[in-house]
Length: 166
Image (cartoon, rainbow, N blue to C red; front, side):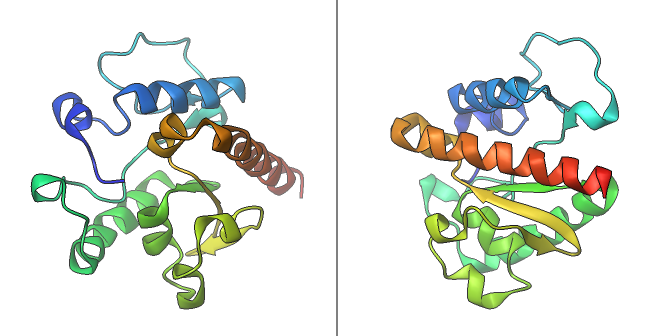
């Protein structure tokens, strides 16, 4: 989703209750956010392999909560590409339809697929493995999908472990 009021105030992605959920899910996998929300209590320092960089595909809020347009997604995609080049992630967890539209754009047939059909498979973005899942805001409203999102995170962790071993 586009950044919300909590994220604008904090100047960080996933800064509200959805961010708490995401942070807890990462923590359950032994990870911590590399770029934590400024108001969050710092955890113990982790190695680079134990950190997860969190960002939004959309870098600013559309006016009056409007749905982001294709032009806005395209404009933000350049920033995301640069972020990915700088961070050099080992795997990307694409959370939500806008993330999928940008990250899976190299395979146009995937962009129009519903999230549920993209889950459970390893995709690629500029050579980086991608796992698709539901965004934390949706999980806050629909707790039935939390188990599916947890399975997706476990799938991403297993894919990352397999890449390290292989």
